[in-house]
Amino acid sequence: MATTTTPSGACPAGACVTLDATHPIGPVTHAGSGINQGVEPSINDAADLRALATTMYRSAPPLRPDGSYNWTNWDIASSTGAQTTLVLSDMWTLTDSNGYRVTPWSNWSEYASWVRSTTANILASGRTVDYWDVYNEPGWHNYYSPADFAAETPDDLLQQFLVAYQAIKSVDPTAAIIGPSIGLWALHPLPPNTLTHEPDLTTFLDFAAAHGLQLAAVTWHDNGQTLADLNADFITTWALVRSLPGLGQPKMFLDEYGTPGNQPIPGWDVGYLAAITDAGISSASRSCWETCDAPDLDGLLTDNGQSTTSEYYIGLTYAQMSGQMVATSSSNNTMQALGSIDSSKRQMVALVGRAVAPSASNPAPPTSVRVNLVVPWNSPRVNVALSYEPSQPGAAVSGPIRTSPSNLTTQPDGAGNELVSFSIPNFADGAAYNVVATPSQ
Image (cartoon, rainbow, N blue to C red; front, side, top):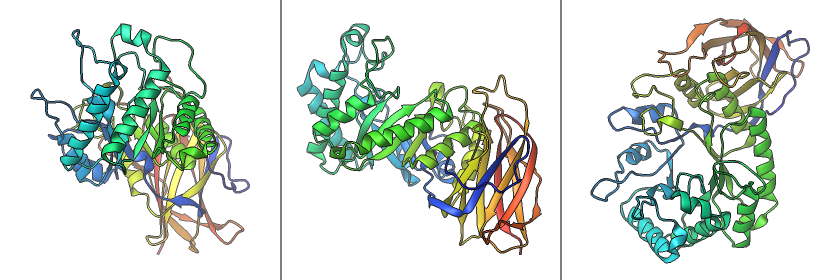
């Protein structure tokens, strides 16, 4: 997390978290509000996507029985102003006599021709594709037949990316192409295994730089990681990209984040959003896991798309952030926070979460937490609206639960700013708190 000074004596026996609105770290971008699929035309998803300030929709249109593509969900997402990432590999449906997908390296000319015609047809349809993702989790065991998977190599997948890149660019030289969207973050070649034959990040980026591929973004999935590991992966990936000037200046996209166990837990969601913010990730999208075809916005709604979850309200608070993101610190790495300050609104918006156990089945005991807000207002009192989302994975909830505090007295922080502090005596593992602070009139 970005750091700032914690006021002396402000930390109780449990933990303390500080958000310093006098130290902005960059503009609010809502980079972590992307989703993978999860949109359904029979549900009012356009309104939800707007309310959640969704910045990225990553998907591909399904194929209709008549051979045409169904762009309905894509058009819903695009109509909200969200950027779009097209996963080209999801559209490659050429099959062999046994019903398995044909490997692109079986016939490079045929594959390149398909990429060119598909790109041209999409552009002719008038659909907006902001980013072209050549493949999703390349080399995964369920793409091709068992025999083809056994024979597949990382070199095949590197060549597939090159062929697709050149084919797309031949149709649209301005196309923004991203990759590799690997399923397992790794810096070194993976040992032989039965899960994937994908190239590691170093091998892929060395290949891209050697072939002059100008990636719009370096992309990967980081599922199953602790928050500390996620932060370490961000730092290492940035260093790797910057060591290869031939790549240009690509952005960083986290195509998927979260696990089936911790993604529905509000405290973990806050931790992910905090890590994404601090790392300067340009776009990050929630994983959809077992509900990729459900109208649930990747778990923000219940499976039927009719009811909101606690995660939905984390998203609403995140969407409410505006102006500048602020520096944060924590005395305990299981406590995470992110927040914004908007000088024009004279408003600070923050999320504070606790993430200890990686699933809701065995949570850690509650603990006492002190929250410190350093605000740039010369005001003797500050109104603090506080509410929380309990950890109830998958359950339908009607909204955050309001709790104390309210109109709080400020104290000088010794640097010409005001400090507001309050305690949360029984901060449950997996819970998250929403904070909105404004100066009293």
